[in-house]
Image (tube, rainbow, N blue to C red; front, side, top):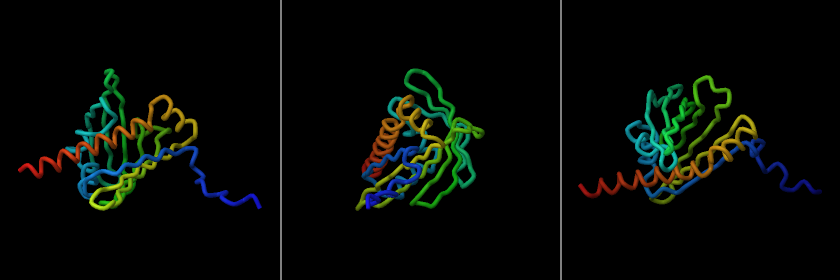
Length: 166
């Protein structure tokens, strides 16, 4: 017997980070905040970080080249290419330090209606368990991801508030 429940964990579980949050805003607005550079640069990154975009083409095969500026003054070169876009449901991307980064990781973002709100999930798979562990331990990827989604939630709340003031 003893096989019950085996195989329920995905083959990539030890290389994954999954972060989700319910954001009190319509799915279309949350999706738009991820797809337009005028929005992204206002909220992307963990608390205390700012983002400078060098290149932005939101289309399958398009690229987003940017620098994240840490609160301690450290600059982090970043690069994303979009591999799948299904408005307003799903975005898939490859994310690394540069186009040639052998350690780039894959992320899939899903946007699900949750009543009047939106449940966003970031599902990231790293090439190796070691790279995933380094991202968690050295770069605090889980907490940073949670803070990034918190910044997104605050940003869309501000858009909604301003929209009802006018």
